[in-house]
Structure formats: C-alpha cells, structure tokens
Length: 124
Image (cartoon, rainbow, N blue to C red; front, side, top):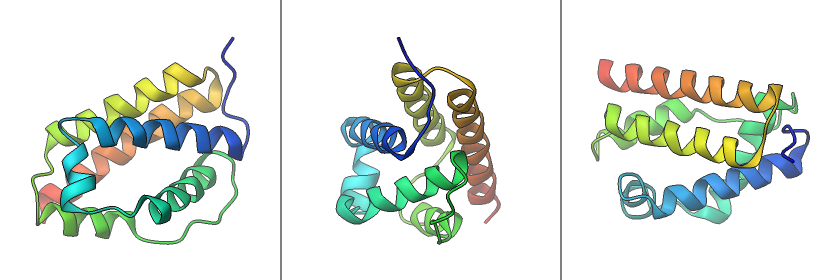
C-alpha cells in the first residue's frame, strides 16, 4: 500500500526515481546530460533541498531555478513539449510511489512550476 510523502527519505526516493526517468527520456535526457551537462552528484542534493522546502517546510534551498532555466532555453529548445514531458514524468513518478495529500500537492505545485517556467521562457 502506498503512503504519502512524509520525510526527507521520501523526497530522496521521489527525486532519484524522477531524475532516473528524466535521464532515460528521449525528449528530456539529452537536455540534462548533453546540453546542461548536469553533475548529478551536485544537482540531486539541490533538488532534495528544493522539494523538501516545498513539501516539508525545511528551508535549506537557495538559488534561482528560473534564471538557470532561462539561460538553458537560450541554448536548446524548451517549449511546451519539454515542459509537458517533464510534468508527465514527475506526476507519473509521484503516482507510482505515493498517495495522499502531500503527493497531490506535489503534483499540483509541479504543474504550477512547469507552467510558470514556460511562461517566463516564452516572454524573454
């Protein structure tokens, strides 16, 4: 039986599972691996901090994800296609692993983040 997102271990599981799927995805993988050349040892802990601050009110994240995505969008195509794929992978990962109020909030907030980033990218 699935449980809700409750602690940092759940966030780590979610983030690791999600980014494993991203890296293997035909639409998104090359953006992370070949264009942005993500250092996963640095990126994953930042994502743990980001999502932990969003869902567990542990505020250890600092940075400007919007700026990084806008900069990246100048190098490679980041359209509705890529953001829809990102959101689909995120919500699928949440649904595969968790069920509950925070899991639903995670999917809702991820949708808002994707829409806001796309809007900002399209406006520059």
